[in-house]
Amino acid sequence: ATHAAHVERHPPPPSTMADVAEVTQAFSNQGFAFDDTDDVAAQCFAMCRSFGASAFDLALSWDAYYTENANRMKTATPTGAHMEAFRVHYEKHVLKTSKSNAMKTPTAYVYGKRSLAESLESGALDSATANAAVDASLAAVTPGRGGDTPGAQTKHARTAFARANGGGGVTDTAGVTLPSANAHEALEQMKPAKGTTAFAKRLTPGMAKTELNPHLPAPVAGSGARTGKNAHAVEVTVQHSAHGKLNETRLFMRDRVADKVDMIETRLASFQKQVEANHPGLRCGAAVYAASQDDVTVVGRVVCDSEGKLNEHSVMLEGSIATSNGMRVRLELRELPNFSLFPGQIVCVQGQNPSGHCLVAKRLICGAPPAMAVSDLKAPAHGALTIAVASGPFTCMGDLAYEPLDALFAALAKHKPDSLILLGPFVDCENKIVAGTGEDAGAAEPLEVSFEEVFAVGVRDRLEAFLSNADVDGYYPSVVLVPSVRDATAAAAFPQPPLLDPSAIETPASARVTAVANPGSFAVNGITFHVCTQDVLRHLSASEAAREGGGGGPDRMTRLG
Image 1 (cartoon, rainbow, N blue to C red):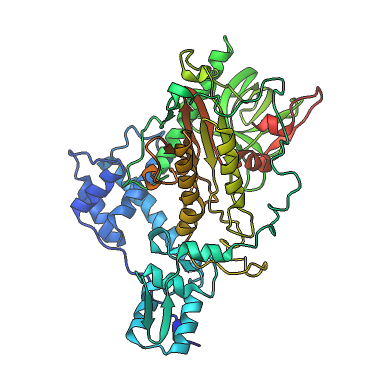
Image 2 (image 1 turned 90 degrees about the horizontal axis):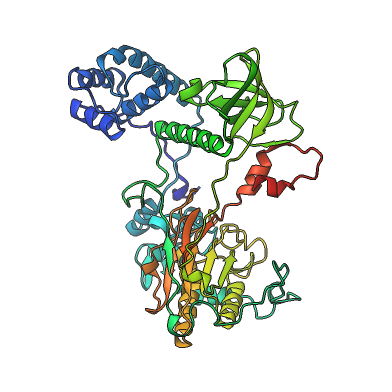
């Protein structure tokens, strides 16, 4: 075994004890300010000392306690009257956590990049051992987000290690030569021979597979909004959410349990108002658990009674806290000729609940869509507007040559649409080279550069060249970039923030590049677009419970959409 393979295990450090000020600040950060009339902070501090807990852990436990008992508590403010019950709740939490930790299998500690760097710089490893250590420990590390992005499995990871540690030239450490790699040259060497790829061998390049409204005249290059004096008449406006843009210091998608409960309650109340507005005379405020021999109409959320897949016999309806105290009842669907449900769906059900435990549905309202957006008649889009939409990946699965992207830009330069919407992935995690399986699949060389460098050379440089050439030709398109959950350079969460700051792309003054979130909304000359690169319909169809009756209803994808 080499020196790099040595593993040591140490017990986790004990929780850091808190003081009264830290306890007060931790509860305040979670949105629960103490009542000044009671000595609640001191009691919470005493609990921290008694259980050896941190102030943050105690504040999170209060958040969970309040969420579970919100319907019985008059206020979210911790008071002396709550402390005894909260202490019992936290004691159960500590006991459950200790049992759970005792059952877990210890995880091995893996040396990071810094530990290996110290070993190399100290000269403790000879040349042969150092080569083996670098290959073994850095084979899955490529410099990227924060300097430690999990990358392609490559036996040449020494190059990435040198570049990640600021090695602009050649680094010689303990007899190991770590040459730096030029990203453009490295990707050029990995390109397959011209005309040998599946994309180059396609039989009908540029052929239109499907055409909607063929009776309409085809657009002519340069006939859109950016012609003559209106060369800069296309404007892209990003429509942010009601809460505004997230602060840079805030973690993306950081939600408390109470926030999620409030969101579900808001959705239920909003859906009830929409249904009552679309169906005059219908009142949907009944409780799901109320026993009645007469027909009742309720609004609730579809949930499954177990951990398995939703089916006709496992459907339950969860009411809102306002009308039903969050209680659930079984939803019987035998009298419905057809239905389509998935977990988390908000529905309106009309039926009978004679026992209070089972609601027999007679009518199901699954959607209350708002009115269609209407564009301003004075918007310049009503004159002429051509938009091209392209979805990634923009390179073949076995290479990073980005031939499809080159062909796309060539077609855009010919047809000259006013606006271009590019949907990720741009650096696809499922690409064989990016995923580290290219060498096994017969690729010429493994990946030796970071994912960010692949994006810069493969996508950004091509986009900048396209916009620069268009500016010379008097063509000024606007570009919208949308990330994907399969993007190796994007945040690994959904929803996703914008892929990058538009200022990171050097463009002519006439060009405008806009980056939007996924999913996101934006307007092009007053025409609103909603985009999402996640295959939502695939996930819904995988968890759907449905019955298709007669009558020639819509197909499955239309129904889910």
